[in-house]
Image (tube, rainbow, N blue to C red):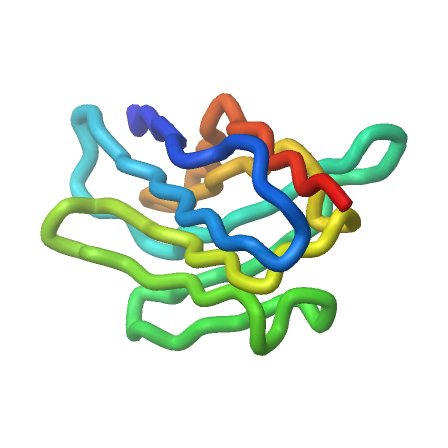
Length: 115
């Protein structure tokens, strides 16, 4: 079992920055792929950024050049640095992790970007 706890959401003005954190805890052997998803009101959940076990990263087109995902494998923690935030980035952001082929989700953290 893996528990994911996100933190770092909040209210920020357009153009500002936020850093999200997601720590994995529990009784597990290893956590493989970790990533961030988001869900805006009335919309489907979408992938934002992913970091793979080998350190490779992937980003949604809408956040490329503005968001950076990073990972501290020793701490089983993944971060999402969000710069140049836009009102359309407003959403609940969810951390996702895969461990031994099982998918886990965090509870979500709300990011609100005001114009």
